[in-house]
Figure 1: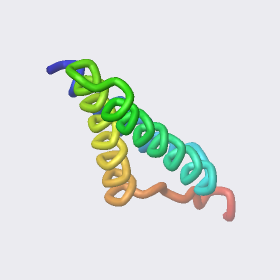
Figure 2 (figure 1 turned 60 degrees about the vertical axis):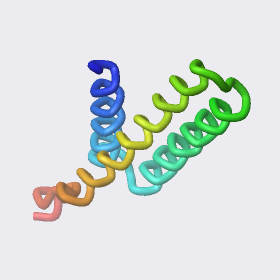
Figure 3 (figure 1 turned 180 degrees about the vertical axis):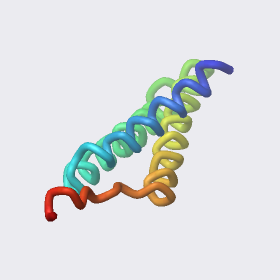
Length: 88
């Protein structure tokens, strides 16, 4: 159970922190890359591994998807704040 929570929290925090410190273009590329990696791992766990080992790998991949989704929700509700001190 702690591993499940850890995977979701780490991925969500990574997505949120990436939004704060990276440009929008980099944010989109990295988020899409992580999503595609999770999709490939999920498909591999279903068709390549199978059995209980595949189920465990698939669950970890789905948890990473959940972390990405929570990270995007955090980005929507807490957007990046623009720094106005430079323009003054």
